[in-house]
Length: 205
Image 1 (cartoon, one colour):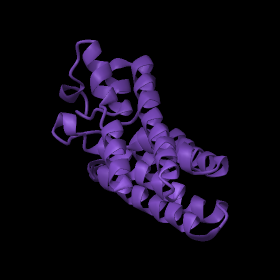
Image 2 (tube, rainbow, N blue to C red; image 1 turned 180 degrees about the vertical axis):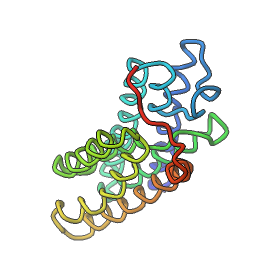
Image 3 (cartoon, rainbow, N blue to C red; image 1 turned 120 degrees about the horizontal axis):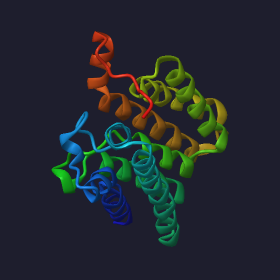
Image 4 (cartoon, helix red, strand yellow; image 1 turned 45 degrees about the vertical axis):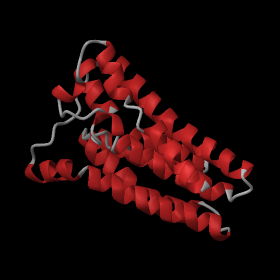
């Protein structure tokens, strides 16, 4: 029962549509502008850096808090805290990607996943994934391609840089595989546009 409660609470936390709410506070329905996505990248393109960075921070904070809160709840219930953290991470990302408040249409989960990673993995993994994102972005100026490459690098980084210590490691490793696959799936439209050469590059604003 505790696992279901953790999943539900984490989903509801993740489902808070930060991008939609921030844009709405300025009189903008972000779903009607740019790509129509409620994530930080679209908010940044439509409204500028200040608002885009704010949304990124809010979405990342959701992921971090979900992991930490889930681990605390599991520990308080004398259950496996590592499993609680992983379930909290999954619930939060699913909540962000498929928010109940916007008819299950949400963001692509990159910022929320970044917060989750901060809560689950050592700094070496975070820095490795971040460096890959930055290199790909600076070379191509495609946020989507950088996000996809960073997502694909995550399981590799976890496998190489995290100590293989029993079941807790394998839970985190298979979780990294799961969210990597989910991130690529959520970017399937971007992949199609990249293949056609019609994907938008990031431009300074």
